[in-house]
Image (cartoon, rainbow, N blue to C red):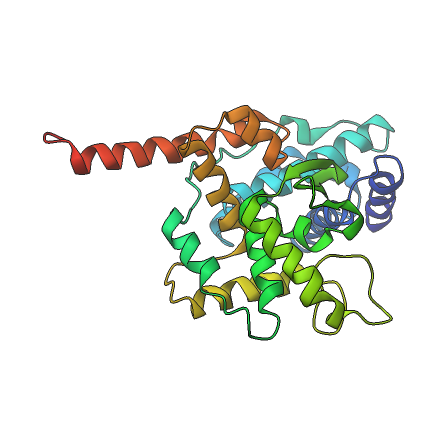
Length: 297
């Protein structure tokens, strides 16, 4: 079973050109299922897997491991594409995963920061402190352009066009897109590039825009830590993390009249339905305002 997983991951990498993160996610899902099959049911061949195995596994992950519906959905999608591939090359008699319905997604509204709180976060950074210009530039860019944290850490100098106010980033599925950089973010990034980044460069430095104090590319984990630390220093009690700035970017654009299709393009969403969650956020805000200020609200 492990051999078939390895072959499938190579197929995703070579034939489909999918990202390493996606390959890792699929591998983890398949290996977790195969380990469970061997331990619980002594199943050692993919052709021995039945619909009952799927339902029992998913049920156990949901009830015993308390896995969220969104995480179950990710696992099931990995299993579905694997079994479809296996059935296509006749490695199994039938695609049993096809018969399994995806877990119903739980509806949720993304958390956001209001505009004064974002301003407080950004303007609280003391530019005279070490690495402050870098941190200010990163936070400004996350909020100005709605970048994913992986897009921020992967952003490169050759893809930054400050004069035009544009940055080219690589998002999910290795898709690239051009995103505007607002005036405040342009100024912060320019200050960092001129006054701080040169001091961070070492012989191991690549062309990534944002560097660690050792001159290396920042990890996504480190960016999370920086954002949280900056929020703590600003005296913000809310749980602040990089994606929260992306949510705030989209919500504030919509609240100020931006078209949903434009926001979809800026965020790099393949499907408009993904972006439509922000309309619910805005509707909730409008209802709250109505309830607060209308005499019979």
